[in-house]
Image (cartoon, rainbow, N blue to C red; front, side, top):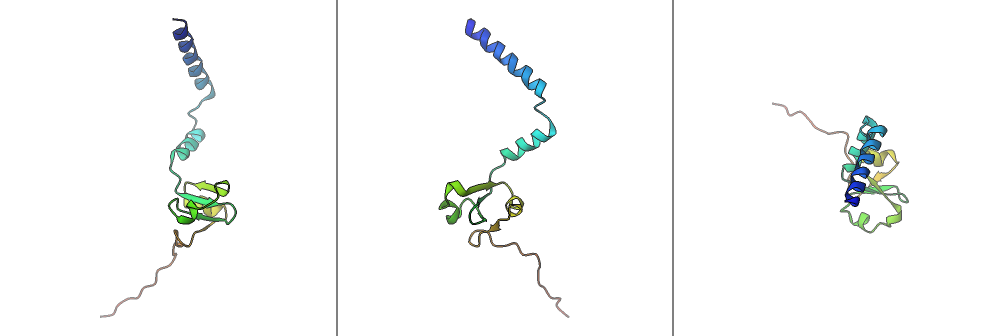
Length: 101
């Protein structure tokens, strides 16, 4: 009976602390949402290149130099360039011609 009372008091304290600190603010909710997303890219802090996690160069990378990214723009904002093996550059223009009759 003593352990049960202690457990219930502990749960009540946790609830009160959570309500006082306003855990569900918008800023914290956005950070929590981002942390739940999977990491899609692995960057190298030495070479400043980023890879897909399945890339052979990402697998062979020194873990001390690995930086994880959720989105491609995060890696680009960190001055990383895409790996030439697993991430070909995104083309920004398309060439085409109009066919005549």
